[in-house]
Length: 180
Ligand code: MN
Image (cartoon, rainbow, N blue to C red; front, side, top):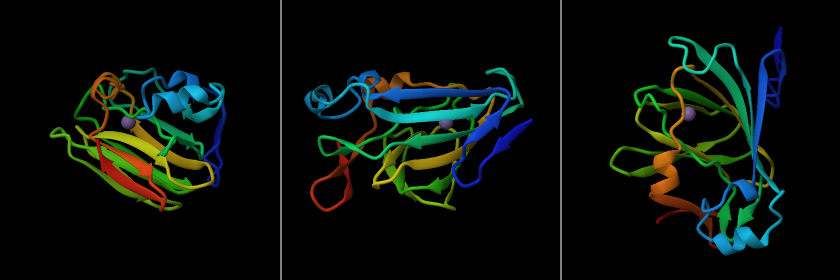
């Protein structure tokens, strides 16, 4: 038995996995590393719940989950997820907005980065080969549902090394996409 709360995306039942990332887990992610270091490392940046219907890597299966990105900034940069490509690079994914206000950053293989605004009811198809990252540009938690192939896997490496080609900063008048 598994239950999803359509308001919050909260999953309840068997085979629900939880993970979280705190600022201390995100060394080097934000442009202003000194600002990150000066903050409480235990501050929650985001957490993920997922229903593990299959073992990771099973071909033809699906995973279903919810990501919650907390509101906040490191320096002038909004809290965000690490972002990733899929290990099986052709695998696609759906995201949908549940609550809060965010930007979904999408970067193609030529390192062109664009964004789609995320809010309750917005639906986002992320084709294969597109790196994706959620950014909370609002003042409430950003909750986003997701469904992706169980054999997609995650490739964080290239993003950890090279980052995205643009960052979402608040330079005094709200979020703007700034080329890195
Ligand atoms: Mn993904």
